[in-house]
Length: 483
Ligand code: GLN
Image 1: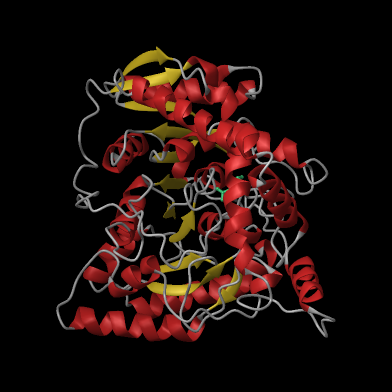
Image 2: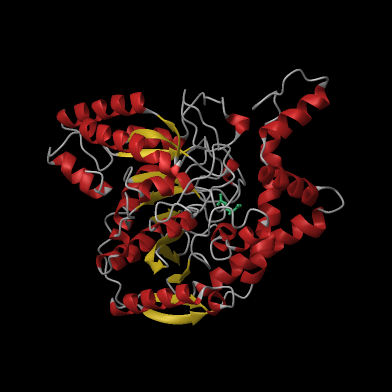
């Protein structure tokens, strides 16, 4: 039962082959049995899950239907869930029970999805390895000595290990696509503004975007359908109609123009990954796509710009966690300054503190023009590169990451080494574009992802290309041994 995709579950439930309650119980038992190896959950919500599953079964018995009705999922632990701990992977929020549901949580619950729990993540979504969580590192089911990627590592490891079919995640600089690549999943970061950020604890507000992590493009279409849409509570949400993402999955790729940036194949890319990317290009050519070399000349500036803008926004967003308004409060403070210092010093981990310091510095009076403003100018150049490229091509294709998943601890002593691994993903966030990562093969038994980028609001095109690719390849069907 645990091998089923969301699409298969939807068919099984519609055909009355099993009930949502039966399936939910099977998956909850599987999580209890196997998750100790992975640490992919921070909280399990068994009682809520059973209650939601029974309600979904009752709705179906009354003639209700829908692809998400009775479908088991989990939420990254930065989506607020009413009455349930919403920790953001931090000691700071270890005892925070959100007073309301995030829009994404509410929408999926209304569609009948069943919440099995809240998944582990890098603290405040800062990281690429899921090692900065206060609840401990998450392990990669493909090799327990390796990281699953981050910051949505819990959602990725759980779905890859078949503990559940799909989960929500967020992507500020790659945190949906990179863990998808590291664990052999399909993950989609939507256009900025497509999915509501209301109730999604902010890391870098101008970059953050929620999206689906699943095994197939078909399942990402189902989950995205339930997440996307205008939300008056989010001032950056965009009032555009949501297309039927499943309807365009079958479109032909004949004549599709795929751009491959020459900058992608530079020295930093593992040559074994380069070869797998070439294979996926050939596969798409067989399906009718036309390949064109393009250039993204400002790509080399994207990492430094991102690692100024994201910490700057984070330093501002995280100022509310002061032990008074929100978050952990220290014992017996001597005075107000002592309260702030010790509450924040105890509540935040090392990586979060580093970024708050970098961000506060970049925004300070004397340095604003030199760092923050300059980074914003680079951001515009990165966007302009994409706009020029999309005049010539329909999709941009390349690797999701320069290397496969590294060993736990391998990059802990050098944060910049980890930042460099984001080179292919962060440009989409800087420009606000949608991006998808899908399985493209293996290197030393570890999964490799190919990334597709599209113009604004062309999520349907990304899902269509990925689905056609998956109809003709079987990388996405491989299961990690032991799971
Ligand atoms: N690795 C990037 C960072 O640490 C991206 C994280 C994310 O997308 N949440 O900022």
